[in-house]
Length: 528
Image 1 (cartoon, one colour):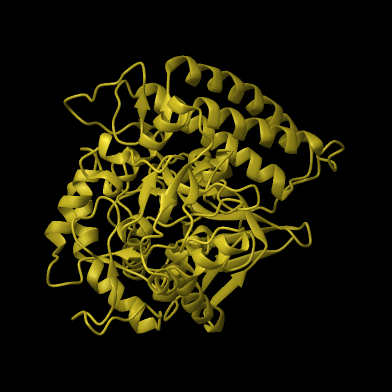
Image 2: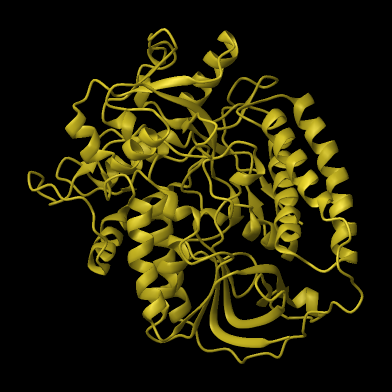
């Protein structure tokens, strides 16, 4: 067993974690834990770009208005104003780091700005259609080269170490002192202590059978924070991206919203458009509306998918603006310059999460949560496209500033991980079976359209899985698969609890039993 000290321990290496690490590293020793490699998180999968008021035709006030509209009355206006007003400087910071955004000499900003659903103007800065990769590679290289940042790949955090877990009676409440993490390569569990610990593990898309998320999106930070005593809010609002490529060999390949922003049209098999029948904004309506419209048309007509057609644009335009999508689709026999793209909705983004303030602080002392793991109040009941990476940037910087302004705390010797009473697992097939069962019933019962009966069925199955997994966890040595399944079941439970408490349809949560929106919008806050 090993015991390592850092000034700040960051769990997760997406844009939020990397932004925080680079802003702290001038004066702090930073440990950066990631459960696969540095660039394997969901941030690297982002195709579209980052929204910010950068042009003369735009302003933070217009961006705020669009965000509040998409959020269906649940955005925290103070948080929204703070984040979006800081958006332009956050983009300038990325440019200064060397991120190769797509240029456009005809634009006064010097960069090409595109438009996505819910935005009233072009404000999404991007690096072709692989923005996430470009940002992650740039910041990842800087993190690896920095002497004050220790990157620990193939480590999955197990649980936070808190006052309550240690049996301490802290006068100022429950505090976090670090975390236990499993080295997937050696099987060794290490103890990491830190003055501040930050959860930046991303969302929980893998709780669903169909998702645009990578395999790493298993709700780890949300589940760990919940077990430690963090408040969690608005987990019922799971954003389903309207256009995930429908192909047996595609595996969660996202077709960016920018395709619709640049003129792509949603059609049925016979070539007829249907979005104008559902919303006056048609293909540029917010994601919740477009996803529900596709779901409605598929169920009404018994379809496996619908089609996104941008073949009316020139081949030159498509290859220049969407080189990644063009190449991937062509590998699968779809030429987007001539053929419509078969698409279906898929779980994409977790709008809820651990409750934080303007600096990313949670209700536990010395513990922060940033990025998709957190519920900041920015996204409300439906995230506006391309606001997520901006949130990562702004809160990564805000958390760094808050940490740097703190007086140093004394380090604490923490107990080692105890596995003296466990053995190696004898039937690991249980884990894969439970994982498959969870994702299937979450898709069927807690998807785009919900009912009380479906939620009750899901809750019953989650209770049984909880019992099985807790018994397994108590008796066998931990593995990465077991830890991820444990976190997914906890996250699924939070989603269902939250959905059952919301007796209305708002934003991403649509219930056939409560189809109307209540007059007053309230957050769903869960406490231990």
